[in-house]
Length: 293
Image 1 (tube, one colour):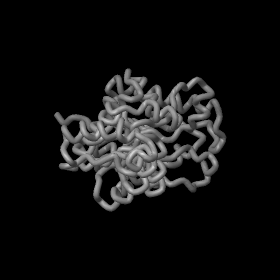
Image 2 (cartoon, helix red, strand yellow; image 1 turned 45 degrees about the horizontal axis):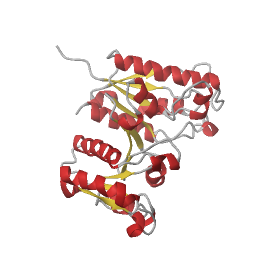
Image 3 (cartoon, one colour; image 1 turned 90 degrees about the vertical axis):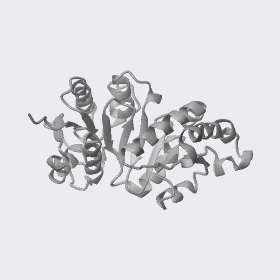
Image 4 (tube, helix red, strand yellow; image 1 turned 180 degrees about the vertical axis):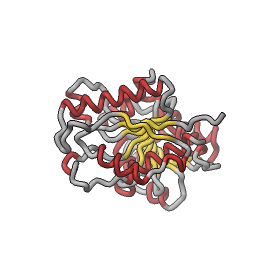
């Protein structure tokens, strides 16, 4: 008896943002049957006006997130793709997480550091050691063990994506990766020990600490398969500059695949038929491919 295809749960996001329209557009392009999956829409935009973000629309977005977690636990869906939410509005209704990544970590009993936020595109892949926190907090939490943990998850993902011998670059924290200690000693005290541990396990496929002002050029030229960045903007600024319309936010460490577009709710253009669905299409496609590996 033929088994049913795995199901991707697609949450509506904030129903007053661009989520509903990019979902409608994406589902005319993305063909689940081509990837042996099906898609289950979670949430509804009925009764909401585009561009009018509110506490009520935030509550609808949160209800969809909670429903997706329930469906995962019950085995009714097997992966999740999230349309964008408005973090500010969610905070106003008691959502105590910096983003959807941290929501799912908590929902499945994981600490923030037990999941890794990555950004995926054909041009560049980045992974983050810290995500939605202040820069000062990101520096304070940085340890060799934390770098190793996120690097290992990233290397495991690359192998699942058929990169036989993944090459990972690890960024330095300071300008010019500290310039030999002239601009800070975090590289010597924290990053170098982490890279040494990773090389002991994975060999010379791990490089670093490397200056963040040049490493992305090397990555897009094909020298590295991914770049591990030590804080949010170190990775997200170059990534969104290069791949804003087709980038995918993919969470590692959860007991299921979870992804989302790399942009926000864009309430200013909601309902005007201006929003691109490319990032959502890419998220659905990547999630479907991973489900079938």
